[in-house]
Amino acid sequence: MAHIRTKVEEGQRQDNADKWEDLKRLYWNAAKREFFGRGQNSWAKAILFYTLFYTSLLLMMIILLAFALLAMDDIEPFRTGGDCPLQNSPGVAMRPIPDLPSMLIRFVQGKPQSYKPYADHIQSFLLQYENEAQVGENFIDCVDGRPDHSKDNSKVCRFDVNNLGDMCTWQRDYGYDEGQPCLIFKLNKIFNWEPDLYSYGERPAEVGDRYDEDHIGFSCEGEFPADRENLGNITYEPERGFPKYFYPYLNQEGYRSPLVMVRFTSPANGMVLNVICKAWARNVRQTYNDWHGLIRFQLLID
Image (tube, rainbow, N blue to C red; front, top):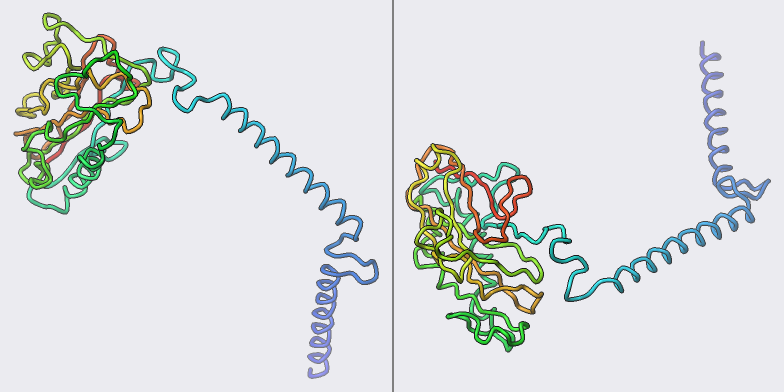
């Protein structure tokens, strides 16, 4: 038995030695002078081929990128008006951004850990509207409308955050601690778009007496009858909507979109409320499929 065991062990050692020799020949075959199965000439041809191949790809990418950059204007986009993907009708954006894809804003009244992310999101967004962020020769005051509208449109109007009222502030946690959440709304920017506003007699019923002929109207309501019944009272700051004198947007340096702060003062607790908010102008299309002119979200206060 010992003799047989010795023979088996010698065979295993021989197999291991053969495998080790095969592995060494894979890295370097001294007889054929090959490294990883390729000779010197073969490696030179392979390196030359792949160097030329990837260099050509890189040059093609650089040339195509250069043509693309030459075709683009730093100020005016290539496609504007009805030819652009937005089809010359702005969408509505909101802050804080709800949880996607449900578009649900949910928090527990009186529990800061549940609503603090929403309040912090609003506060960080408003930092770009602080007075020190709107200082410079490019900014002008447009409290009573853009002065001399025919002048150089490269100037931009300052947006005063005081216009958002004194009930929706960081000191009050933007109403979330009281179960009266505040949300910020704005229109998405479209190059050279100007609102075609309704006359006061044509004003939409949704904006009622808040409507002003120099503003894009804005309204929020429950999407379905049960939502409208339980959503409660809603306030707007500024209540007239988005001032016309902020338009057109021409990619001006320092441009700030006008804002509307919406406060839900008495929403019902413990139920999901479907809310829809709309902007109102003749040339603002309100479509549910691509969300032009409106935004839909859900509100749940536990």
